[in-house]
Image (cartoon, rainbow, N blue to C red; front, side, top):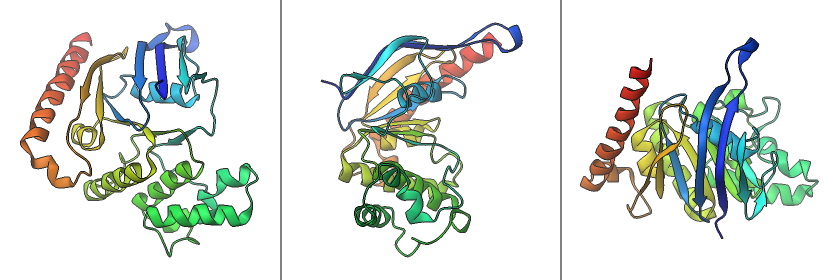
Length: 261
């Protein structure tokens, strides 16, 4: 059985101040296997973040249903960990306290919280920063903490909405490799939204290309590059061929979107 099943899921938002409703997502169906790393690629406004929010339970579908391990998704839950583009750490909590937030909510004993937070602080390379507050950290460090906080709850699936979009290019490359390392060790199922073609290929076992709004899955492209992946794979002929194919898919949608306006 697939870990995640998206069955005919669509989303229409009501009109503002009596205006026409907006169809953000045409009915989408998708099967996601355990330990898949799926990147969702598309133009701004194509519905990729809406699809992620539906899986997270932050929005309700207008049509269809979402199943996680066979159980319907009916709102947010600890079985799904979410990381946003903006740094969503609690500014009044230090690194360890942020990572332990969900564990405290569950009533986990303090010693177990410390054991889990120690493990993830080591995984994200922030030993020595346990007592630092978010304002004392760089953007990349804050996103490391956000990823660790999501993983500390031991979710079945990790949902990331352009988590590296606000970072400079060098930090972004480092964060991509860090995330892949964590994914290989933790064996999590991942859905990762991005508009960066290289990032989508470098991370994924599969890349989903979405059409311009209203969004639908236009292409489902398997990525056969072996793991573990090093940034040098980006100069390989196989990577270049995938990049050319996906660039053409996205460009065609950009042309259609421009003609529609």
